[in-house]
Length: 91
Image (tube, rainbow, N blue to C red; front, side):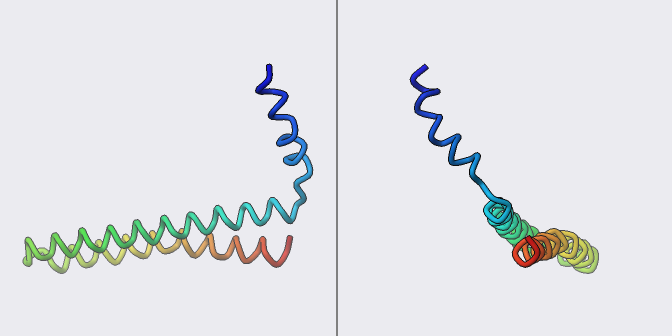
């Protein structure tokens, strides 16, 4: 029961969030998503280069797959960037 009593001040702070504050939280989450997208793209490229080093005959197929994967991964970051700009200026 003491846990609920200790939780009440935090709940009142959460109830006072404004739309602008929630937009800033969403912008922060978009930033985390862009960071994760960059990490995934870096991992994808490093593994493709490792595979190209092991099997040079597959260079063209691996390069095509790597470029396609990087493009698809980058679209997530671009969408998050557009969303964060939208939230920052329009909310």
